[in-house]
Image 1 (cartoon, rainbow, N blue to C red):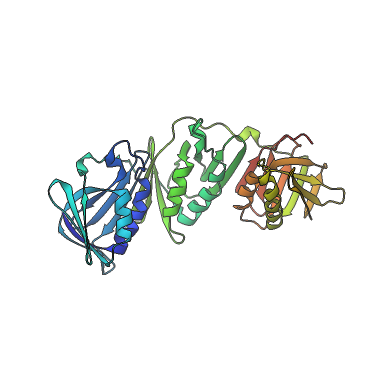
Image 2: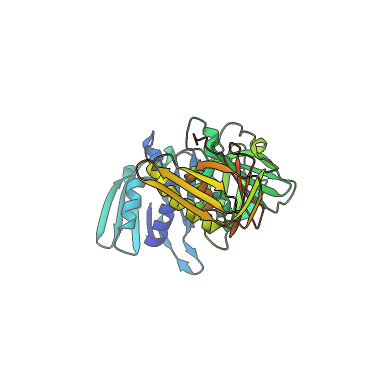
Length: 380
């Protein structure tokens, strides 16, 4: 194999696929990037068996020449070293040549590097996926839905299914739900499907979705999503992102969401975010993250936190709207801040059904986001 390629194009593709290379591989090949070269272009692939990412660099596109192929072939190179070395190469062009036993020579400017390559035949083949049903989403929408739901996914491997985000498609509405049993995030979106295509109990690791989100361009991109028996394929321009679906049945979360409230508040999102952020400084020192919210007789809201060593923070906010019973409630300030940072509305609705019942948070100007936080039981 012999290839001359643009350093920038190669570096971009390596950065994309390296996210799927295993950091501590059970077998060395899974810590590598597979390079396949033919006269049409260069395909780079990495996989840790849970996810696989593939990036394609055409030889020529839009009258730009990105690569010159002198001899087709394949090799697998250590991702950890290859990522770092390509980034630091001195010239705009890189020559990669593979000799006997996959010994690989990389030249750029006056720099020459020899790497030990691995046999590409040992690299796991990507599963073939039937592409009968394709769901198309704007990249910007997919990124927003991921950002607004991954925050509530569990980080504990004791319940693997809760480390993922549940995807459901029904009657043209796509819904993401995540929960770690202490909080819940939900996001819906109307989508167009070609036929009566529907699915449920598709659960994808939140960590995987965060990595996917980094690869999705900000603007004017369409992501094709193909769902198979136990795999989901995302197609983004020249990148394929394949991930397995988590095993198990996601719990029914609909029963924990109240439909009527004893107390209702409408607040300025930024004001309540800033106030809880300040109160969080004190609660963080106490390592409890407990912040209290109390309604006052004059219709204002008091937000407070205290520390036995440092003292107390108290702040009062004007409520745009306050209906129902007086309320005193305590909650995890970190959970609340995570929610407030992803709400894309100037005002928010908070509904309470009692001091020990779930807190419901929604943007005021639309219905497609909804968050639930369980309150803390405190001595006072």
